[in-house]
Structure formats: structure tokens, C-alpha cells
Image 1 (cartoon, one colour):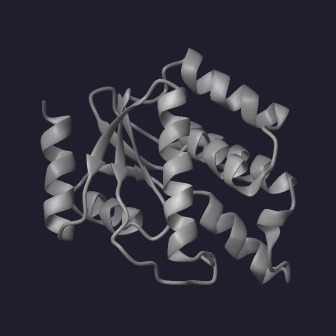
Image 2 (image 1 turned 60 degrees about the vertical axis):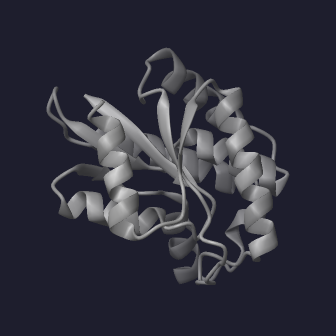
Length: 179
């Protein structure tokens, strides 16, 4: 099993890339934070990310999704973010690493859950607001830098996927995993 992480700042195009990879027949594991935010909104909580427990809820859902993901031994699987992203989010939001997040980071390192090469999707030069994405372009750039630093601190090699058409970006990823 080769699990690859697709990551980057909000609005960079990760979800479109993940959707295309899935359409192309690859196994994918969904991103967690957006679903946690959507569930909180449905329950009337507007800014769940301000609550420090948000980090644990996201990290726990990521872990559950990774563990539940069915796979074949020779399969390639793409994960829309992982706990390292949650560590970057905690840093960006000013939340401490919780014991749960620290354990999850240790688990993914110890068990080598993910490939060392991480596909870092670069920002598109703009941001489109959504219910879950309420961030300015300037803040997106700040988050992108934090994200990049955290991944490098955890020893991952970033494969930069620059702005291009969806097909071009997906082809860059496919070419990199076939090497």
C-alpha cells in the first residue's frame, strides 16, 4: 500500500484534484476538517475552529478515515490531508498540540503510514470563500507557509504542484507516483 498525501492551503484546488484522481480509478480518503465544520454549522456552531477541541475532533476523524480505508496491498491511495495538516492548522489558529494530536503524529511517523513524498498543491493566486473557508488570500499565504514548514519539520519531502489546469496538475502527480 502506498498512501500519498495531497495537501496545501485552503482554496488551492486539492478537492478538485482528489475528485479527478478518484474518477481516474484511484482510491481516495476524504479530508476531515471541512466535514467537521459543516457538521458544526448544521448544529448552529458558526466558528468551531475557535474551540481548541476542534483540533482533536479533526485529528480523530482523520485517523478513523485512514484506518477504515479499504485497500489492496499493491494499491495507491490518496489522502486529502492528514494529521500533519492538523498540526499546521493548530499552529495557524494558535492552538497547542493536544495529547491526541501528538499521539497521532507519533503513530503516523512510527508506522510509516504515508509515503515520504507529499504533494503540496500551491495556491491559485486567489481564494473563493465558502461556508467552511472564511479566509482571506493573505491569510491563505500565511497558512501555506506554516503548512510547508510543519511538513518539512516532520521530515516529509514536498513535491510542489504549481498552478495549472486540473488535468496538468493530476498528470504531474501521476507521473511522480510512477517513478
